[in-house]
Every structure is written in C-alpha cells, then in structure tokens.
Length: 87
View (cartoon, rainbow, N blue to C red):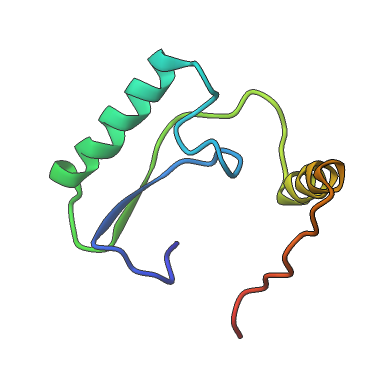
C-alpha cells in the first residue's frame, strides 16, 4: 500500500475478502469502520498509513487463499484467471 501513496489510509491485516472482519460480526465491523473513518481526521501528515490494532484469530496466508479459491472454482467448473502484478 505504501507504493500507492494514498493521502491517508488505514491498514488492517485481515485475509482478502474480509476487509472489515468476519461475516456477521457486526460489533467488530462497526469498530473497524469507525477507526478507519477516524484516520481521515487524525492522520498527522499526508501519506500516513495507520495500522489498526485488530488481529485475525487464526493464521492465514495468501497461498491459503489461492488454494481455497482454486478449490471453489474447480467445484463450480470454472477456471481461475491468471492475474499477475505488472512489472
């Protein structure tokens, strides 16, 4: 995210697809949203990235996400798209 240089940003180290927390965890989602919006008024300088203090309760990795995605697509009879970052 630092390469993009947003004017101000909040970072949450949660798995892809869970930007505000687990589904149906309304309390956590509300806290995350309030804290992220608070960054708009409290960021000390342009480009600041604030790490929010929430942690996912089980280990996760991008490779696990990709395996789960490929499995889901295979069950549905679809093929995964080959996307790679531009170099």
